[in-house]
Image (cartoon, rainbow, N blue to C red; front, side, top):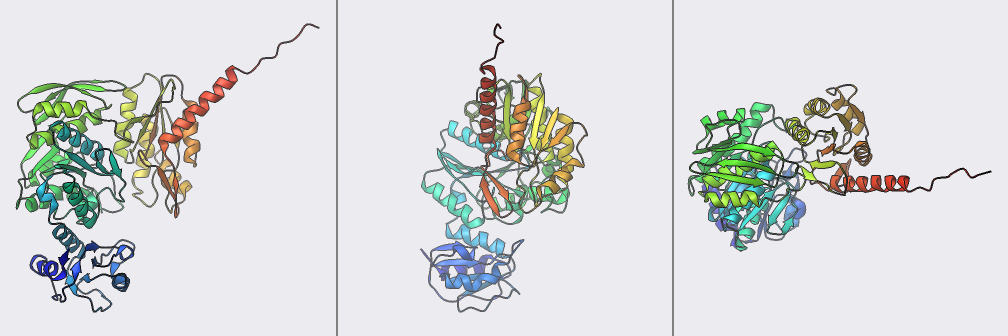
Length: 513
């Protein structure tokens, strides 16, 4: 419990742009930014969102028991008797208050932030594996949720809003967690969700087209990613020496390395001047082997993940290990113990004689990489099922259509999460870039998966892309249960049943007359 005066006086000292002081001294029990979730004793911070404005709900927050309000200067604050602080930017204030309320937990543990268009989830999981191999108790925060040991708690965003993030840090700290590996999205950086988080390491996997419905262009998107290596490096300087990890094979990394305000550890598959490298790579259908080159040592690694991009993810994690000064042996043990990451080139096995891979690839670059790796894994055909999400970056749709139909032998173009858009209109946008004679369309995703499975022949690879680990589909204002892995397994079993019945159907023979 804390008194409101202590917290609001701290605000007055820390937040630029304070307009009017606060009064009153009730106890504070939490921090809220959604009026529907306000509990008695909360400070309510009004945020301006893409679809609504929290300043419209100040009375609702007060009625629910809020003890103080934080609003933006100039906003219609629906005059209240509650203590009120006016600031220039309530998002920044929300992060400041949340970190202070939970007593800056990120300063008391190792925090690794992984940003980039693709590979964040796998890299964060691998970093946690490395930490565990070095006898550190580790946790993961990101797209898959909050993972502490075998406990998985689903979360709403890849990067949590500041109060949820700081509370998670505090709860994990209380459980003895020593290192948190977290995904840091461009939204999380721009919207100050991670502000007041002190990172020990910030890592960039890559930058390719995504989220251009939110960012103005690729330059804007790259600048958002770059904040981790500039503003956050400066922020951490008060309590830690943050280090950056950059993918030397990525063209944007070169620019970020010049602009970075922190020391850099580089990694690469192609470039020989990187700090951490991979040599003698051998790809297999169930594992990948390579020589890991660290600053002073070389090690043989047997990675239980497939594909070149998983080698890149492994190198990113190894570079984080170097930045954290983990022993080389621990880095190798961690990589060798790597688990299959849900929905990331995840194999679906149901006794079939072809390979089925489910992957989260939902950008042109990610789809290209997944299909390229699928081609590497087979002498047969590559079949692809994918769609594009509704109410999101429309510019990538024809590019994904081109990628799929160029690299796969046959593509079934279908729905992803249509949200409020017409699925057929989304498919039409995809077809603008698709090659004639190399695809078919099927709006129903379940039918599309069954169709691709039915087309598969021995030795083929079926790639089901776009949703990965997700176990739901967003249709208009409805959310239904839908899991690509479950659907693929059901399709395989249905195919086997039909073929078994066909092979064992009694045959009629003509009898002697």
